[in-house]
Image (cartoon, rainbow, N blue to C red; front, side, top):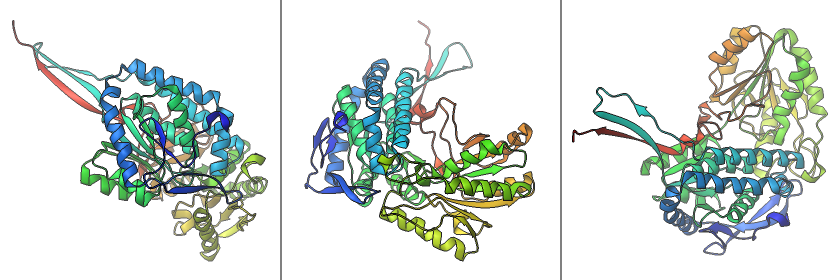
Length: 482
């Protein structure tokens, strides 16, 4: 990765690569081999304080910068990202454990997001408001918050860095980013390219560290004006409670238990590969992963059989082999998913394929459980692994009930050739995003990453995300006679 090389055992504060105040470091492991790739600085409260201080000092000048100039700088960053796709893809793939092609896809997505907000930087407008007489004028303006804390997980670090940092910068905020200590390398590589693009010191700062140390210090820091968190629902609740002490607005992007809902009239040749990919891409370690499969009873057996064949055909291996699926990211994640594999058959689910962890790394095979009922852990909780829970339904009303029988509300995918049924279900499902005859949002530019219920509240990466990093100010003027 020489083209995007950055110093090991350091983090990025105030435009420079620096060691942690106490010199501590964290090992970064390759999930396929469990061997150390490199080290990064282990940030503590003092390092976080340095980063927030740098961001505070940089904010006034950055907010005052012509938004077209901000956009041009963000576009230079995007240009450097696209020029280094292969190097960045290798960094993300090895760090997370995903196939190289998966890393490449993530970098292309990240580039598209950064480029999108480069163009949006000078398109942020307020509104003029009607008045009761011509002697009054009312309008609104959108202003940046100030210092934005961004805390992201390890599953798609390049995409999440882009989806949160780019709109925050475009809106005129400065940023302190804390990537997961499990997979921090792609965010560090991206910020090195941002440094080369010419961002002023302090506008972007990145500190890696453990959640109870760096994460808590950042999200409770009195110098932070806005918090964006992507991760588990439990941690999201804790961050929201902590933010209440400083009355800081919070954007939360949390868990999911997304269903693929297959009706008898669906095009199964299109649906089956998409369903398999929805739970095996990134080894199922996506918040929107299609971890529930709801199938109309008349085609249940055929669908389960074909999905099982597709899952069994998925080839697993280390990132550089560039197969279909890699390992889970860490020992802790491996233990968590293994627990679901033990509990599901004990609770009465029928194992169709997979089930037994294999390999020297943290590999778990694509797994399907049938005869799952709503009370089972595998149906209720986010597994964050390649584990699919199958339930059947008899009619549209029952399908709707099953779709909504979850605490989460991130994504629902509906497979049917009946457009009226699809639109009715899209209206009735409690989900921030709905896809029909596809998984997720392929082909739609600026699609909002919305969510409901325990999945949080966010518009990350979409057409409205820029406003999420601004606060609206209303201005009312009485025009005096002269």
